[in-house]
Length: 324
Ligand code: UDP
Image 1 (cartoon, protein in one colour):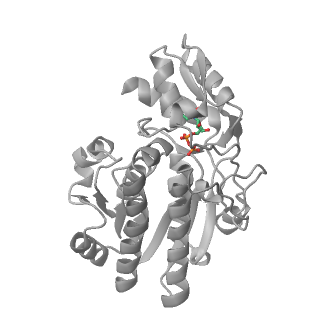
Image 2 (tube, rainbow, N blue to C red):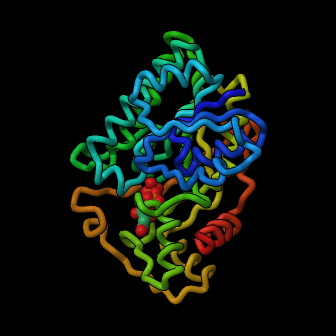
Image 3 (cartoon, rainbow, N blue to C red):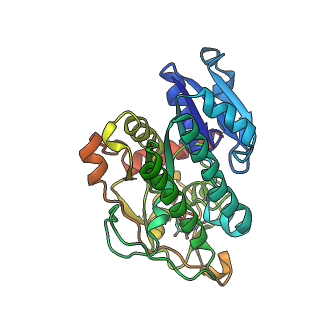
């Protein structure tokens, strides 16, 4: 099979590329390296077993001709290219909206032209600021005002979902939408705000861990290999087409407890420093206080259960970052 991965040099994309290459498939990557990096796919490029199986295009998904050729060539498309990371979105508001809206439109337009099945990576951000748990796919969506730019990310990803579902309804294009809940693992960078690589890096340098707000906000982290397995299974499952699925872990943890666990696990001398949100992100910021996925839908359809528990994923990330 020929697999096109937009954002294939990104954190999740590079793991997905590796899994398909290991299975013997051909992988085509398109990535503009805005948040992805060649470092993520270096080992894949240098692996003799993957010679003539991996094709890398450093380009934007907005380039019609490149995307036309790649979509025409491949059998299936994973659309992972997007502006990601709270810090990145706040620093690049306009470009982020353009990438997420226009990029997805381009991908869907071409998938429809060639009738190629497409999986869209959406996000748990889409739910907005709920306090209840778990979040299920049929839940309402609650955002803050447009002055708070964090929500632009959620709004663009929600629009991507609507556009994909509109294609499904209108032309019968086979689309699958996955809402990923704080995917973590080796290769994730802290440069765009992501909390675990930031805390681990701070702990390894014995620097204070920068906990934003009071640290009582919670997240449920999901190991990247579990996510990859879920995505690969979904695209081979008929009942997944035209549907939206949460993909997420089970262990809800507060950010302050996360910081304590990382200090303990790394044996670090770091302290914890509470930083008010407005100091970290400016005055127009609002965090999501709680985020726990309901995974009954994906569990029913493909038997998805995250295999990697929180301690194991943390250890794997720490080992990787120490080595790096
Ligand atoms: N966070 C933090 N310190 C950091 C980076 C993030 O306290 O150095 C917090 C952030 O405010 C949020 C949580 O950790 O409450 C998860 O942040 P991340 O950006 O990883 O993911 P998201 O906010 O998209 O869930």
